[in-house]
Image 1 (cartoon, rainbow, N blue to C red):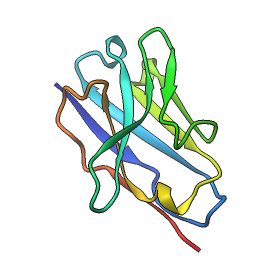
Image 2 (image 1 turned 90 degrees about the horizontal axis):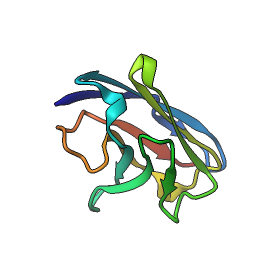
Image 3 (image 1 turned 30 degrees about the horizontal axis):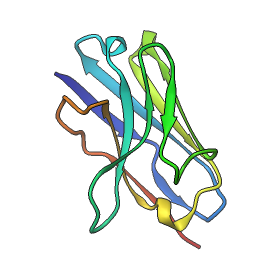
Amino acid sequence: QVQFVESGGGLVQPGGSLSLSCAASGRRFSIYNKGWYRQAPGKERELVASETTLGSTKYADSVKGRFTISRDSAKNRMYLQMNNLKPEDTAVYYCNEDPPWSSWGQGTQVTVSS
């Protein structure tokens, strides 16, 4: 399994930006598709952005055009750049494979509020 540690969350005003980072350790991270997920209070965890091993990306409709997923395979890291944040983006954000084969990390809290 891969172990994940997410960071970079925080409190931001609507319209602001945050950059999340995910450090992965364990088996070779680069050979699996990757994803960023989020879970808002009272809701199920959802996939918001994913990237295949060939570099193709896909986004949930709710974040399309605002979020960008990227990776640095040499460093076993992946990132999520979030722009024009909205209150409905408030959630705990997690990284994992896509589909999520490994255990979940602790996540990083993102709160969008004025």
